[in-house]
Image (cartoon, rainbow, N blue to C red; front, side, top):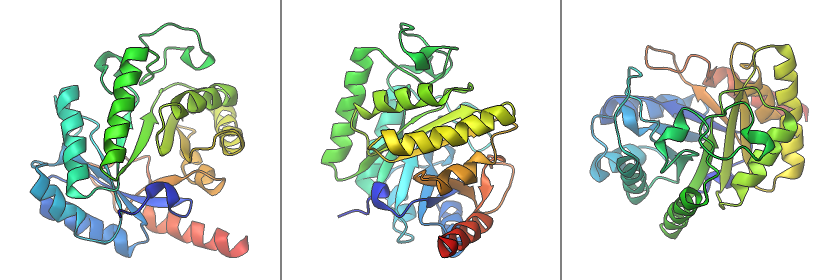
Length: 272
């Protein structure tokens, strides 16, 4: 049986791997492993080869569970051009190769929702033109089918939404409960913090999510004021902290340093 990402001790420390080839990915996984990662966040759209055999080599290179994702960006952040069907096929290849889970974005099967909200504005979380949020029942049904398919293959699904706007705690909780109905194993939501008030709201949001949502949640804010939420919120109960082992031109520079985060988490555990 594969390791369960949803059952890793929280916060799980995800070493983010954005590499061009198998050898580079394996090398970076080893760096992450030695610096404290408890799981790997593998960006498949950066890889030149995502065939099952290549993915097996990467996944079998360590005992860390792999979360496989395809955000449709190349290593140098250009649009990779995959159709939704091709993205889904890459998820299933990763599961076949042994990935512990996939990151299924909220716009899956409806590409226009990646950039703007396209549905009926009838929920609190649909205000302000959020990205990656789908309310169309037909699209949701297809997402649920994919989640069931992945579960049948003994893997888990992290369902992620990156609305790209500031949101209140009530909006985020309502969104999480809405996503929870699709039966994912982990929910990930990333909002935006433009100032200290937004940051404070994101911290209060994490506390409320822990109380109101049964499914493990990873929640933080991007933006110029959001970086602190990447470490504070996991310490308050968020399931995953997404970390970089070393920074380069392919890195998400807002993501936090793995060794520093591992040390903070270990010291907090000693205190508590």
